[in-house]
Image 1: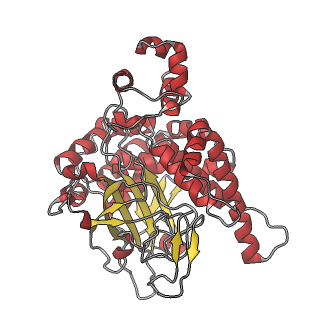
Image 2: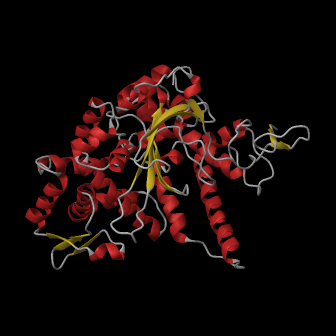
Image 3: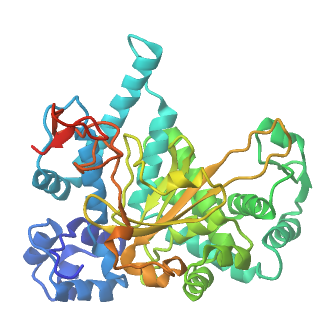
Length: 471
């Protein structure tokens, strides 16, 4: 962040509000006038290094808390949207930047509106209906994902409740599934059984409250069983804690609130299996070796990667990672980022991304250094996850997990071993998807980027049958 002008008005205002502090009170604590702080909060003045240091000390956060990650992600989404042929021109980068800084709420509402428009347009194209109706499930899923991203994928009250239970119930005295099963029996008199018929119904677990019986599907690894048991514990013992963030979220539809509740249950389960401070120390000691962390805590590769993306407790932050889960068709199933990195929202993913190599070599870990179109360089690891088929007729789901962070954190990762971080030839240029990507020299381009002219030429022919001409 050194040397950059930092405009962080919305983030300062958010921290101040969370701590119940008035603008005048914060100004006094910082040794500023209320009018000067008001200008900072309205992005009329940048943060100076001295004020940044005082804010970090006052609120117990790292300087990266005030980075422009959210602004960069908003700008990319807006560029993707404005790349739709529906819009005749592409605004200049400075115009996008001014819009994002000056009216972030309005930008978010524009994204919501465009998402609804796309849903209607796709339904009309697929069904040919004259008066299409929206798909509430799809819109709600995206809305909840945006909410989780806005919360930096960290929910302090839930995280600390899970960590407290881990310590008081001494869940480290045995395997996770064994200890969680014991907890449910001792505290709730719940009997845990295996029911192979659940798999045929597509059900992972079923809880019969009257019979005090929890049925789990068979043929799954113990880390999956442990995660399901942790979900049930969260719902039984911490229902009110899980509900509070959802109530505060402002999510409008019942579908969105229901999905968010499930998300909070999953978050609790991950936080219970991988308690914050224990896991943060272990991650640092092992240099974030995912396989070692799996064995140490008895969890899955996906659970370790997802938990690393949530380590944003103010004053005790871990490395800011991004986490993405995708299937072989390129559908993004989960996506969270504590960095500037943002994947495509409305188009295909970049073909040069290491996630696509995973499906040609299932189970193998792929390490990549990449440069995005804003010239930020990242190091990422990717691997497929999924279970082996239980019969010839089984069609197990295979997905890929990507975990990445800024290359400045590479020395803290075991995966930087053997990499020449200074060799620019090792860095793969990737983009947000062809429609929004501004690279003019990519051999992997599928379609032209909106906002550029096309020179088809007549005297030469390249891999891509045209040249993009900058406006």
